[in-house]
Image 1 (cartoon, each protein chain N blue to C red):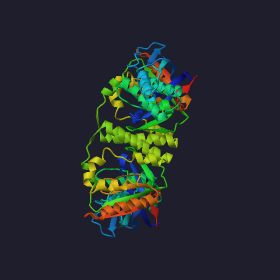
Image 2: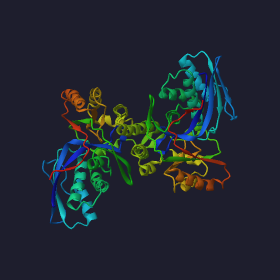
Image 3: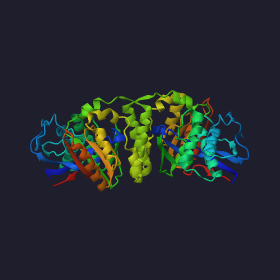
Image 4: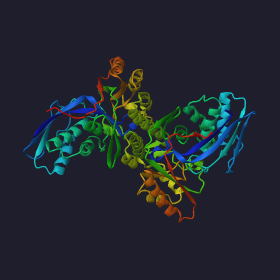
Length: 306
Length: 306
């Protein structure tokens, strides 16, 4: 095989109480990527639908990942990477993670599947570093493993896959403002109150328990962020109004990644449709343009198209 | 029924990564308590084996709990509480929690079982307030519910019972120094680094996942406390030496509650026996007197003797 086409999903990281550790994979939107071996060295990157993303492989997420893998594999040729990007860059649903994870996944497929999923996340982290200045893995892990994942430790990297509840659906509310992860990280205080940390880790532990015990009521109680969200909501237009309107039918809402998208987790597709409708009634009245979409939790991650 | 005798177990709180939220119940040591209805108002407390604990019910853990229940029940008589205390006060394995939980449990039994386990924890928290100055529930919850418990939220109180792994055994290493929870809480910084909090909540989430997935390897990796333990180890004689010697056969060790006891969690009784032996070789050489004991996880909590 010298060429592969894949569908690479979006994802939600920093899930409320799980800042920097908890993420889940979405079924929609997905990028399409085609990666092929070329007979010359180096990496070529083409963005078919022309976002303002650097195509110089040294400055590009995919390039950073590809170069690391080429080095590790001692690979004598290069790769051509073509991306049809449906996950808007800077939207907070893992656009850079999709590019990084897709590159790692595709190159692994093209070179004999030598790497584990954990190793693919490690390679993809070089891409996240280019995108956000930090080697985080909380978007990459759900894209590569599927479902809900916990980045238990970043150094050494340790990823725990968590059970997914198949009745969960997610509404993403995406305001068309660009918010760089780098910038959203800068406003976060480096010191926090121990008392709030205890609340936060109690909720995160409860969230994990809720997934294993299929306890939607408990899950709903734990989708709270007392530390990061209060600092970031000012960056996100109409945050409180949107979250309040979702609360009637959603289990909980929060900032997706570093924003500006908002996720609302719902039990059942019907509730998710009602949440989407209610949010749309609000966003339709605003000057900011929004896109809204509804997705199941994607338990399989990246898929091979051909 | 006008009289009840119960066995009330010790417990471990602040389990490493789970400061203020995670606890488990021990099979040994246990206090024996006999509570009987007396035909006059008020609460009488007798400590059979004479610890220096106030017997004035207004200053006593059991008294505080009993008075709250009498008030709530609008009970016209009083109670006589007799305690044979085997859980040394100030040892860090929930001595005050046992007295408080035992009182709540016994009075509930004697007055028609009107309260849920959650409500019993709430009553018992009045006792913990007397003992430590804080209304915490992380020792009480495992004593009343059994096994591992998560105090997901203290206000409103929400307790999540977690699965117990039946191969887990615990070695408690108890140096005979008294350490008041109040004092051990005072030395803790009220502000912590976000970066460390992320490590801590990643581990706690992983710990919870390890119990559900019966993953002893993961459990072992998560028994770490990067926030509280580094501040408290100076209060505990020979801490590092003891923990290091346990590490060969234990899954992990940490400070039990606010100390000075140390818990070592082991997979299988055989490993626990080896851990106990290795620790004893160290403590036998020290000037501080130690008591060491080995216990399974107690999944049933308080038991009625007659």
